[in-house]
Amino acid sequence: MHYYKKDYPRPQLVRENFTLLDGEWDFAFDRPEFTGTKIRVPFTFETGLSGIGDETPHNSVWYKKEVKVSKPADGKRLILHFEGVDHEAFVYVNGKMIGSHKGGYSRFSFDITEYITEGLNEIKVNATDELDPAMPRGKQRWIEENFGCWYVQTTGIWKSVWMEEVGDTYVKELKITPDRDNGCAFVSVGTNLPANDGGHRAKAKVYFEGKEVTSLESDITKEADTLRLSLFNTRICEWGLREWAPDHPDLYDVEIELVKDGKSVDKVYSYFGLRDIRIDGDKVLLNGEPLYQRLILDQGYFKDSHLTPPSEEALIKDIDSILALGYNGVRKHQKTEDERFLYWCDVKGVLVWSEMAAAYTFSDEAVSEFTKEWIEIVRQNYSHPCIITWTPFNESWGIREVKRDRRQQAFTESIYHLTKAIDPMRPVIVNDGWEHTVSDIITLHDYEEKGEVLYKRYTEYKDDILSNRVYHSRYRSAFAYGYKYDGKPVIISEFGGIAFNEEGGWGYGNKVTNEEDFLKRFDSITTAIKKLDYVCGYCYTQVSDVQQEINGLLTEDRRFKIDPAKIKEINIREV
Figure 1 (cartoon, rainbow, N blue to C red):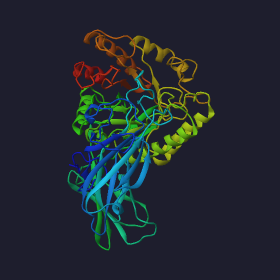
Figure 2: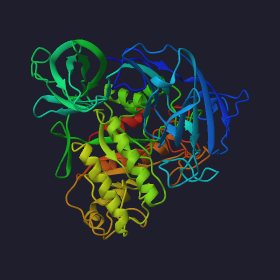
Figure 3: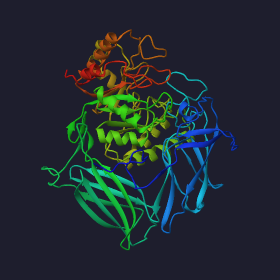
Figure 4: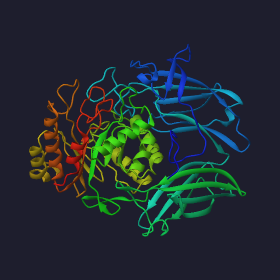
């Protein structure tokens, strides 16, 4: 079994000891005048689980917590981590500002060694946020009331806060790239080592189910050195290699130790999956075999905690529910999820499309913020084998004129190529749903209610849709002007959204009155897509209800509306 620590916020770079700072903090709106109000971190003040439950927008909030700390021994440092603060965070230790970070969906860290004293230490955080559509905000509303499919805003600390002690020289980042064709993995070890600081070595060991597969020792001479780890070993498998795939999500464990002058200065644990994902003509291949993707759209909202999962167990329950419904993957929609979700998708073999939270206006500032945060997210989650697709844009949100505007088209192209520069192996979908520019997969959104109509549209009008002569969605074409279909894979990446009559709120199209009507419609549209021989997957909307949107297969508090076995039978049935 790979190295696992329950509730550890960063499961692909694990150390033995950590201090979780979640729990009760002092809290104040607008200014740092703490008068006894408490908040339960990491739940935001808008949520019930925070203990406050005030959905009124506030542009500035303050947090304070006293933490008992032992001054690190010589040769040790103390790092303070924030998994997510929306939108801009200013962090103070014992009255001194130690740094700031902008962007609500990416992790950031500070070395606080020089700011702490033995005993009690005060940590303060000022988080600022606005109802600003230029910020990457995903499904957070930018007016004071919910509307359409946009929900209550998320302000301040919404993911875990934690500390860990590290060596003077320590591992800051691991980038693990599997090379299935050559039976190896490349591990880039990012450290805080100054350039040309000699004398450090990295020791790497790889295990599978507790058996050592290989080991390697190498000099570390700069901030990021790469180790090539050969994995071929017939002692662990008669074929020498174990691959990661949904039906056998095999994971290798890796241990990295930094050594100087024969003495260990840091040790971290991680894991990876040996798999490749690639495009071959109109097919998506996983480990060289055509992959049919049965995805479900997952917005990751919870009834009493909104974007923050109420617990690690809640994440596991969602994943198990998705598998019980017969899906083999999720499109994590408009959210960078808690990394423990990705961990359990790695363990359970669930495919993930990783999507960026959209901004809703186009400007120089919006371009700059989006680009910085997206690159941080790609780097942070790169090594998870479950992630098989990056999806930076959705439905022209934030790029409303991309169909004609060359600046907006250039922006999407630049994000595509920047993503490829960091990760050349995974497909990148640019503008999921319609008006594609450069994109490795062509994705179409269609909420047609009748299967026979859906099937006819994508058989009789296939060439017209893919050549922009016919809109596949109301007023929307498959490609932006100047771009054309070149034989790439096609996936119907949003459809369904069926809701029941008796529920308040909305779904897509007409509501149904009972389970029989639901299953008839679900079967009709799902089977219609599966019969399209040139379409290599689909994504149903959605896992669970979200606030006023009630088209989930589960309620907001995660009760199945339909017998999951009946949904699974339709999803896995051969056509």
